Image (cartoon, rainbow, N blue to C red; front, top):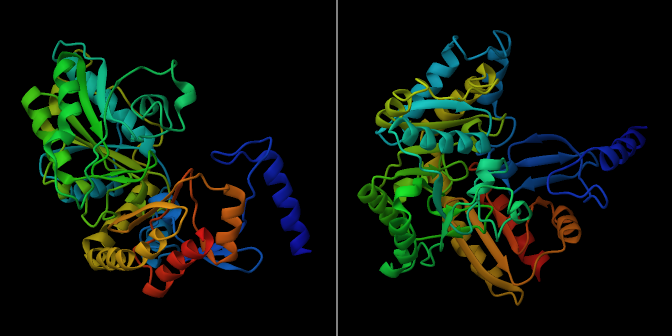
Length: 426
């Protein structure tokens, strides 16, 4: 009877539930998950598979974590939600304290929001309102190609318009300025000409640019590129010289994923505005934050509007804030540093073997991120089935087969991920 119910559920799912990046005409198969624990997803057919994706970068502590579970259970009996306009509560205050303490010192004001994309929207609006308050109209943003900042409209507008999933919206979105993305890899010798195009575009559009927005060190869904820290250092210097704000999109890279608590630390810089999300709640529920300096916040609020003109309904959700506090407390214990270092060391040992395969163009890694780039795009249906049959959950896109496992993964479990990649890509 149970199998019949599951079959009916899957049929309804295929006919009515619209999954991300999936066609309703020819939907990709979905694998029903019954439960999750640690690094494992329990499928309804009884198979346990290792999650190599951390549910899109978020479940850094693994699934069903007792501390996060307890935080959610304790909070829900008090209040699951209350509006944040004119009201405050301890979970939000505690969370903002932690974020101010953990992020670079100049970042002193925290704006809580619903998701990573909304955090980016907030950062862009913040920059625009900053210049409006100073009596200037600066409608443009400068970024680099191969970037990805989210799926909402303003976030899409600063995502690479030609090399991304958003290319079909070109012409409808505001057009911003895209410099060449850096070619110097993280572990290569720095070449100063790598910053030349960015410098030229900034200087020639200086009076129109409200801010630079960039993913520090690792470009995520735009290509899984890992670039040299000096590029980011030069970006900060050029922004300072021009008096232009710098927005760091740390949504994917924040909270230890690259081996530093925040990827900006690789370059020793602090942005004017920082966006965080994904791992903020340890993957339990959606929450994000946009942090900025006192100077930016006070300038915004000193303008005509007298305040920042944004206010999501679920801003500062107490339940999400309570879980985020528990997640950040786990990070503050410091175990993640050795865990991520161990993952990076193991990826350095095991990924080069995959790099020898004929269809593989490149392999690269940093922290708890491992990337295999192919010459040709994957057959999504077949490769997903092969991975599940090999006991792992890896979700490629295009020519990229990559993993970013939970920090708690054990060496033998990580080896199962890399072994499945090697076997599947042969």
